[in-house]
Length: 202
Image 1 (cartoon, rainbow, N blue to C red):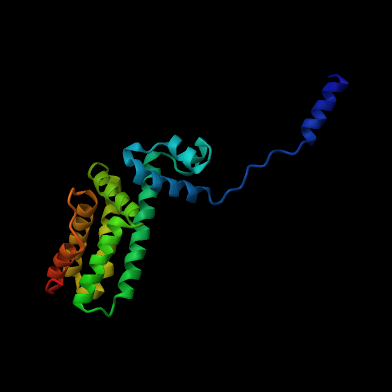
Image 2 (cartoon, helix red, strand yellow):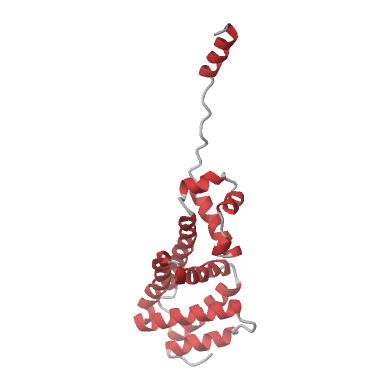
């Protein structure tokens, strides 16, 4: 070994190792991006590379935190399910003292807001979940949780049978509002929900 080699070896040993950047928010950021991409492209349009580019992380980071594509799909869908369940709990608490007529009005407003407002993105992801669960048995528990979350939130207000009927009606009305060439207007939505609640059209 020459003196130059020895110096190089010494410098290498003395040089501090490059520290891996600590980024505790990275898994959360990846999950947020998964949710965004599912809303934009659908589940079939999801890829590790697209997620890495959008989240501004390395490709290996996506597989480090989520072992495969199915895990990524699940974490994105779970975010939507959990957030909507929390929203429904808060909504139900705010309307606990409403009359049936007031509930019909408030639920109609909620359907319209979900279909046409900021909640639309979450609704798109929810419908992606239901379609995906047809072919992916591993997602059916999430689809069931999404349904049961609304029913559980509404049950204290209207009882379990009407809560289940309202959940099914709102789901269908929201989908029609988003996908039909001629979506139902608020009066039509309110009439359907009012029928379930036993009140006359407004």
